[in-house]
Length: 183
Image (tube, rainbow, N blue to C red; front, side, top):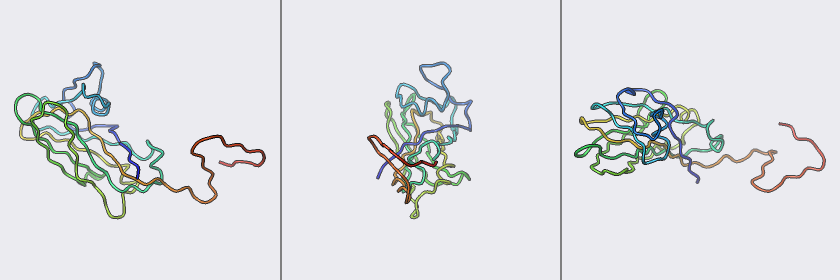
């Protein structure tokens, strides 16, 4: 089985209450939490704030088109900011804001630590329509201010099998001496 990392491509919620620590003055919350750089992060400027991240969908990753998606695991890369332990809640939501998975985290670590949710793995798999509407919800709790470096979804999937009569090539050169290709 293959995996694909899905990153945020939008954000809503208490966006004005989060401070961005980045190398660029014009960095956005979405850029910072999806750049893979542990030198950049966001932190809530006041206690108990919420962000909801829209996640990329099937159209952003051709390998997912027609694939059988078995499970989704949401990960937040976070650390303590200031003094003492920090807490937050991480949730995977569907497009209707229904909670699919909830993970509570607490850390006193000063360096980025990965917090993974339980796997969302319905028996009949995850459909493309459900995946296309998934969201990640980040809620800071207990009046703490954790650093959020990254947030992402890891999908485990089986690639689609080409249908009968389809031509595929995984590497090399395709040579055609006669005939026609219709797309």
